[in-house]
Each structure stands twice: as structure tokens, then as C-alpha cells.
Length: 193
Image 1 (cartoon, rainbow, N blue to C red):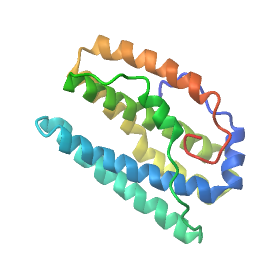
Image 2: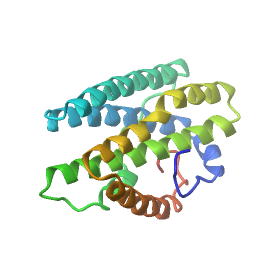
Image 3: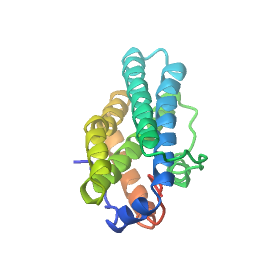
């Protein structure tokens, strides 16, 4: 369904369960960064009305997810930890070289956002399915219902700015790049760790 080329080892779930505070803190910051990214698309590309409208809706939804994660942490008396730089996101950004073509950079940003959303959904689904914590399972199961469409939104938007075949070829190469990197991860209690 998500089109990713590698799956996270289910052993990762135990790592998350053993350090739930780190995981939930990382997830909270990921939601904040996603919302900020949505607002950034609106501010940097105001001439694209459809993009602006969809990104405003996306930013609002991610802000609501931020609030839900924070409320869940408070309900469990889990203190918020400091944000950590995402090595995963930094690695993804290295795939694309900066272009003088503004539309090319837009498409690349959309593809980065799409793959981050796809991997997040894959991890959340794995956690919901395999955790021994019933409340955590329900929380992530309910969150996935909202999240699952985000990767497709970004991918469809990318295809609206360049020929679909070009975007699909780039996406396939990017999926391979991501799969090679993520296959060595899954050893820390981080959303993309």
C-alpha cells in the first residue's frame, strides 16, 4: 500500500516499548516539523493555489496530531525530552541536488515529504500491530487512519508539477535510496531511528 521497498524489523517495537518517552517525544517533534513544513510550502509557493490550500489543510491536521501526541504523553505522565536532529531526514535531503529551477526543487521537496510520511505510517502500523500495550496500539491505529493519505497527497502533488513518468522514475530511485539506508536502522526508539 505504501510502496516502500523495505520493512522495519518487528524487533524495533520492543525498543520503542522500552523507551516510550524518547519515541513519543520524537513523534511529537516530527508532527511539529510536518506542520511547519506544510506552512513553509504555503509561504514559499503562494502562486500555486491548489498546493497552498492542500498544505494549509495538512499543516492543520499535523498540528492536531501534535496535540494528540502531547495529550497522550500527559495522560501517561511521560515528560517531553529534547528534540534530536533527524539523521534520516538529513540523509534523504542528500539524494537531491539543489536546482536553479524552482519547480524542480518543489517536486524534490514533495518527494522527500512523501517518503517521510510513508515510512512514518509503516512504523506506526508496525507499532500498533505488535505492541503489547493495548492503549498504545489503539492510539497508533487511530492515528494511522489520518496519516495514511499524506504520502499519497505529496506524491500526487509532485506529479502535478512535472510529467508523471519523470516523477515516477525519480520516485523509484528515491525509494531504493531510502530502503538501503533504513535497512540499517531500527535500533533506536525514534520514529525513523
